[in-house]
Image 1 (cartoon, rainbow, N blue to C red):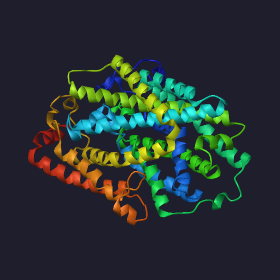
Image 2: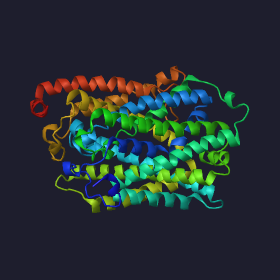
Image 3: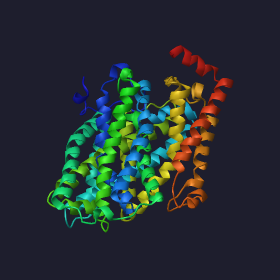
Length: 469
């Protein structure tokens, strides 16, 4: 049975390993799932931060967005091979680094992240629909986008991939049309090239936001590659995910930077509507549906992570489709409440939210990738992931937890945002280099300490590695 024949079928599996006879799909599916899911309003809004919050000229905005996306996508795409190899969701794999109980620290954080992105997408989708339906509040639009998202999240993996394939073509063509319409039909102001001024803090801030956008996808990646055959290969999985996510993010972000510069007194969504007068309903509706695709992914991952959290506490529980449906509805209700309560101060809340994610996700992705590629070379005891005592990985990996906390702490002096400014960031004129420092410190620290720990008491893991190599 091919991937295209399965979207209407309810997915039975949740966090359990995917059997070999249930594997299907090709690396092309990874390109479309990441390209299509990024062609949405929230990506456009994120790109708009370069010219509205960081006050960069257009050329420097594009440069910062380009660097951030291309660098950040490396870390995101390196997770892609883990799904086909291990056949379990990303947060289940985290037990292999942090231990069965220790992993709950990271799992809890990413659940909050998924709900935050879901609520943010609902706000943007609601505003877009309200922009088209004049005189209507954004609440019906929020509910409509949410409904589409819930359906896909309940049906699961294959329907979400089908959503993303359709979005890749439809939203991709609409994105191109929007660029052409704004530049050729509406026209750019005569002072477009001289608006705003370059500043190093703003340039680094733009790079950081774009890099975070990519790194924030790291906890998602295996959830959407775990059904692929195990012989998919590291290279093909990496490049399909890399270019899908990098291009799918960069192009709408550039559109957002353009809109923010031309329409600085409007929100990005309303500015986009003004600049595409004549085709605005088409543009906003298509990108609202794109929001639904991304929201389905956020909700699906949040549910898998919540089930992982619960199964850690109740190891004999094997959640199925019914449990996924119930948890989906509960988490959606929570996200909907957050969207309705926070919609009036969205931009301020969203900027702080994504910068906060940067500080807590960077150490995790460093630990996960070092452990997978440099220490265990992709060889894990998947059965041990589901044991209450963690099997050979134990309940709490003190080295991983300590390095994770260290990775957060070392970033503090380099942080610069509205909530907190570190001493070094202040000395650098507000340049935020925290994510670079977090990666540079966490990765080698974990490699050295974990290597030392394995040489002392890791005989079981080494034996497993030799057996599977």
